[in-house]
Image (cartoon, rainbow, N blue to C red; front, side):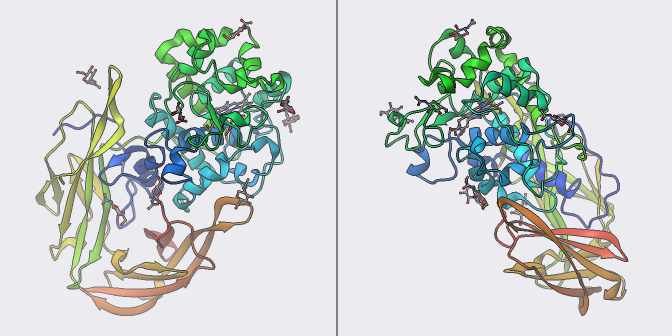
Amino acid sequence: MRVFSLTVALFAGLTNAAFYYPDVQTSLLEHILVDNWGAYASNFSSAITPCTNYVTQIGEAARNSGRTTAAQWMRVLFHDFITANVSAGTGGVDASIGFETARGENSGSAFNDSFTFWRPFVNEFVPMADLVALGTVMSNNLCGGHIMPYRPGRKDANAADPTTGVPAPETDLEETLVFFERAGFDQTDSIKLTACGHTLGSVHHGGFPDVVDDSAVTPNNTNGGVNFDTTRGVFDTKVVEEYLAWTGQKGGPLVTTANITAQSDLRLYESDKNVTMRDLLGQGESFKDTCVDLLGRAMNTVPGSVELKAPIAPLTVKPINVTFDFGSDGRLFLSGRIRILSGANDSNPKSLDLHILNRDIKLEAESENGRSAWGSNLIGTSTTYGTTTYFPFSIDDPSIGKAKSFSIAGQTFSLQGESFIVPSTSTLSGTTLNIIVAIQQSRPCNDFTLETASPEVRQGTLAPRIVEGTAAFQKAPGLSGYQLCQSVAQLDQESTGLVSVKLLESGVLVDTLLVNGGKAGW
Ligand code: HEM
Ligand SMILES: *[C@@H]1O[C@H](CO)[C@@H](O)[C@H](O)[C@H]1NC(C)=O
Ligand SMILES: *[C@@H]1O[C@H](CO)[C@@H](O)[C@H](O)[C@H]1NC(C)=O
Ligand SMILES: *[C@@H]1O[C@H](CO)[C@@H](O)[C@H](O)[C@H]1NC(C)=O
Ligand SMILES: *[C@@H]1O[C@H](CO)[C@@H](O)[C@H](O)[C@H]1NC(C)=O
Ligand SMILES: *[C@@H]1O[C@H](CO)[C@@H](O)[C@H](O)[C@H]1NC(C)=O
Ligand SMILES: *[C@@H]1O[C@H](CO)[C@@H](O)[C@H](O)[C@H]1NC(C)=O
Ligand SMILES: *[C@@H]1O[C@H](CO)[C@@H](O)[C@H](O)[C@H]1NC(C)=O
Ligand SMILES: *[C@@H]1O[C@H](CO)[C@@H](O)[C@H](O)[C@H]1NC(C)=O
């Protein structure tokens, strides 16, 4: 079997009964990064497919709005990041922008539009701030940029950032450079970062009437957008080319507007006599690497107390939804899917060997594949994408509960079937969680506790807060040699996304399950 050669993740220290490899956070975020289109795709990419899409309205209204979701996501990053004071260690990417939408400096619909789409993806393991960064990575990776690494680990702010000061069209050059400097970007960096951002999207009459007058508003451009370059949905060098050659959009409305006070891009780009802009033009295709670097620095600017984790590497072999459960006949079984990620030039595998309890089981590929920006290959002007192939399995061997691991293509994945949350009978309905766990030996149910963490509506921002709770278990009738324990827990509000349910034995975490109450966008 040939698989796309990528960093192989380590699966050490896994204690869960299964489900999330290599851990909950990585599994969820890797899914968004890799599973872009086709079979089992994350819904995240759909918002920016095609890259001119606008997700906040639907149908004709969206197509005719003149707004661009992929571009909005990058602007959200800019506004969240730029109020950082790196010498004080405050601000940066912390989703505080959600509390700051009424500030004049945050004019426009991008912030709440983006948070509305991202909100159902937030849970205990995925804060809004990580999605602010991920939005830019996805827009870049899917819309023509060079693949950008993504590091998780941000934390959501609980209030607005007291620091204000986002450059606006009328902000003078000196003050603009002070804001960038505060966030760790010198003059050259600021020109580069702005040109990278302004290769996508538009300035809209709706939000910026002093820059774009009402003549831009037409039935097929209802928000009156005037684009920064001739390809508003493509991450390319056009904005730089058109500015210097004075063709197409000539660098966009913040260069060409008749209102001299509002020509902020012209002031910035010209502030070193166009030297940096000419340098960017000279870079050609490498402009995209410069943007990977600068946008990466912006998204990794976080408060001093936050430590980012290592970049998420796409997994060549990924077990998904692998879990123990009971069938309708009461028999224990282990089921799930194995996802294989292949590069654009590789052929997709047709079968796969799964080794478990001294048995080799031959798995057959499902007919529908997925497509991924990871492992893609640029041939001329067209891109061929990486492919994901799925191998389902279900094993109801009577001894399956004793399996401690399984292996695929030389990689071993840990399992434990001693005590687990039963997926098919653990549900969230409204605010009621009904959880059943199975325990192999006849230990008392009160050795176990349930911990919950639910994303809920928070005042003043569309970023949810995470509300934690605990509950006890009661003995329930047994099944297939397992003791069952039940817990019914009440959330104080309906959740906005996936609720985490954690099983602890004498205080030690033994299993985690994310329960969908019907709101999650995954
Ligand atoms: C001097 C600095 C900057 C100023 C004054 C500025 C100003 C603006 C304004 C007025 C808009 C129009 C928003 C709308 O009509 O919806 C805009 C759009 C945009 N900005 Fe900037 N910007 C600056 C720097 C940056 C930087 C550093 C980035 C990097 C991520 C960025 C990314 C974007 C994007 C992607 C859009 C398009 C949004 C859309 O189409 O909805 N900007 N900017
Ligand atoms: C950043 O914070 C430091 C320390 O609190 C402060 O002295 C400085 O004025 C701040 N910088 C800006 C540009 O506000
Ligand atoms: C130009 O823009 C500035 C700030 O955006 C605004 O205060 C002023 O009224 C505008 N001038 C004209 C003539 O539209
Ligand atoms: C709107 O329609 C006009 C005339 O058909 C066309 O030139 C223009 O490109 C369209 N604008 C957008 C934003 O689709
Ligand atoms: C910078 O480039 C712009 C756009 O091509 C041009 O209008 C302007 O005169 C240039 N300025 C300098 C100082 O070269
Ligand atoms: C995993 O489970 C979720 C929730 O039931 C489902 O939406 C998704 O399609 C499953 N993915 C795979 C690859 O089995
Ligand atoms: C894939 O194949 C194309 C065309 O044959 C080639 O140009 C490219 O370098 C190959 N890519 C990789 C990653 O091997
Ligand atoms: C954005 O949403 C928040 C939370 O619902 C709300 O308080 C705020 O007023 C909204 N901002 C705008 C500009 O609509
Ligand atoms: C998926 O995203 C689309 C927008 O791209 C949205 O309309 C739809 O409601 C989302 N589906 C789910 C299940 O969240």
